Amino acid sequence: MTKKNKTAIIRKEHFNAAHRLHNEHWSDEKNKQVFGKCNNPHFHGHNYDLEVRVVGFCDQDTGYVMDAKLLSDLIKEKVLNDFDHKNLNLEVDDFKTLNPTAENIARVIYERIRPHLDEELELKITLYETQRNVVEYPAR
Image (tube, rainbow, N blue to C red; front, side, top):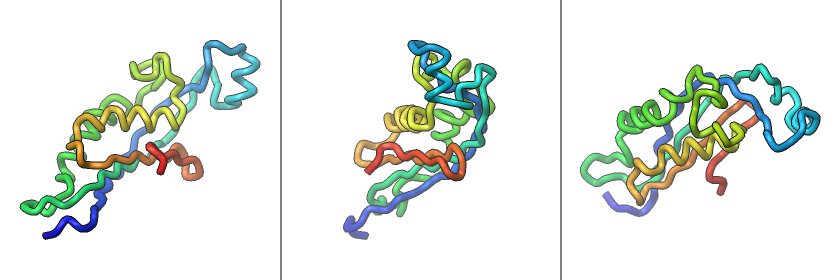
């Protein structure tokens, strides 16, 4: 097996979480103006869909870019266990001082997974906050 072309393995997951978009350095009026309904002081929720894409060359012995079970376990341990059915602002340390926008959530997921992958593997996170609002990190 030659290493001509890279291959992507994509794991799809789902989690539900609540959040509030709010900048503590702004007035209530400015927060409402910028974030609208997403600034609800009682929070609001989303049914997030997540795609974790790992790109690399297939191993000559296994034929894998990465074992799908290992990827699934990694996502569960580093993301789903902490994010699913949680209030991101209140229950996830990453968002104690970071506004949990879809962009920031995608970046945090990347930062939680990246250290656990081989250096030669590429990682891309695609987060669907809604069917119409999608974020990719890193963007290319």
